[in-house]
Length: 123
Image (cartoon, rainbow, N blue to C red; front, side):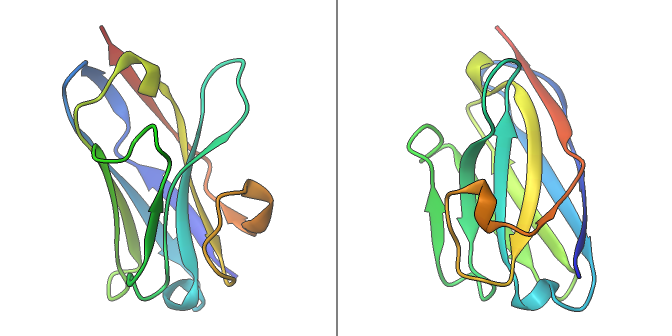
């Protein structure tokens, strides 16, 4: 089992930066792939980024490539999403997710989810 709690969301101006954190508990975290998804009002939840358990591999959605960076610290049971050059269209609730399988871009692959943290980017 893995329990996930996101933090770090907030209100930021366009062009600004935020760093989201995902605090994990449960003995499986260090063996679990980690991902970030987001859901904007009226839209489906979409994949943002994923990282393997060893951090040897990452995957990003085209919409955030070059602006967002996913990372993790297994010694602290933490995952992170550094978001730079934020745009109003990045406004959404951001979710941390984990799976003991390989990284994937589809939400159905992930077994464990946090409650989400709101990110709002003003123009």
